[in-house]
Image (cartoon, rainbow, N blue to C red):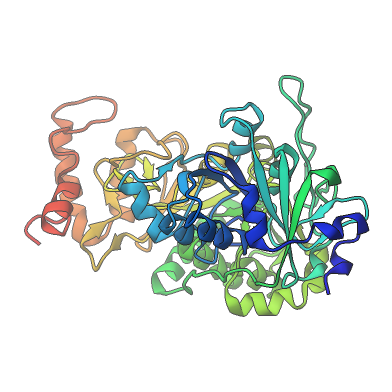
Amino acid sequence: MFEDRIRLASLRDRVISADDAAKLVGDGMVVGMSGFTRAGDAKDMPIALAKRAKTHPMKITLITGASLGHDSDKTLTEAGVLAKRLPFQVDTTLRNAINRGEVMFVDQHLSETVEFLRTGQFGKLDVAVIEAVAITEDGGLVPSSSVGNSASFAILAEKVIVEINLAQPLAFEGMHDIWIPGQRPHRGPLPIVDVRDRVGTNVVKIAPEKIAAIVITDTPDSASNALPADADTQRIAGHLIEFFRHEVSRGRLPHTLPAIQSGIGTIANAVLTGFIDSPFEDLTMYSEVLQDSTFELMDAGKMVFASGSSITVSQAVQDRVFKHLERYRDKLVLRPQEVSNHPEVIRRLGLIALNTALEADIYGNVNSTHVGGTHMMNGIGGSGDFARNARMAIFATKSIAKDGKISSIVPMVPHVDHNEHDVDIIVTEQGLADLRTLAPRERVNLVIDRCAHPSYREVLRDYYRDALRYGGQTPHALERAFDMHVNLRERGSMLAGK
């Protein structure tokens, strides 16, 4: 059944159950596990580790590419397996454990995780658990629907456990471009000058003797839980399309637009889908995650090529695309996340980066991770990698949440992930504020008038008038800066008295 997937015959006797493979993981170990935004994640090993922890308690440091699917983080958290987790997660159970201080979470730019491993910041990588669709005749691993950090995990780990997933189509073979940077300080440049460039190999090359176990699974990826476009996201898309048309007419952007990066999640995915009705053709993408919008744009003839690190799509799109991957083979490439998120390439290609914000303040600082400045949501992911180096860094959000009880535009964000120097555009369903070339005082009214919800505009203007009494390059009334957040915590609404 699986022999055609394990082409190096000498490895076939290493096929064992997930429960037996879990015995290779012990207390205190550092484990690297494949998976990037629910795609290409290890399916059976997290369950087996949680099961083993019932009789052999263990605490591990778990490093992934990004978030896992199949409730794996929930399962591992409830089993008490996680001591430390990085660099990104989206699971409610794990999030609550993080915010209670029970699991230590290292929120990290996704391009940096492997660099920390290479320099020994986490100690040695004891075990890597990697999903693959096949093992080649010379022991190379063929990744599945994501690359993430899997290639470097397999290279750096002392032992490798491979999950051969029969549910993942063999058509993924040949779709990957695995390039691993050299050692510092004599590292050569990353020679990608076009989103279509292939500069590495299509398999992860490791010594076959490192493969300590092979687990056979037959479980598809978890589907994306991103919601479809709504009236607000369509309005955001409309504002962006109009803005891009203006930039093209002024000669500041080419008509085909530079390559686009899109953050994960409902808003970014829905906004990008809105470009189906735009005048822009021959679009390309250089991003981390290829979502429904990527394939909708391709099927509509709007997008001609997409480079990413994973494919994370809804069940309907997964059913359609994964069964017919051959149709997209000449339009897709999947890379390690330190390549998809590499600052050198992002700056060279001059990307348009579209990411989402929890909230932004009147000066253009963005909080994308911490509710109320204290409670972790998911993590910064790759948004910082792109925002600082993109040609144009755009942050989108709906202007209000929770039926108007929360404003996404505030006087001062209580946690800063992207400071004003890295944020070019803020856009909500209300409008778009182009902050480029503007001093802090010039930004305020633009952000309030164009991005804030009407019910919050006078509150924000009143705050700024008060802040001006104190002067400064960036005026703030510090004693009032977080009044809206305090109102939310104590009264359930950012508007006093509501």
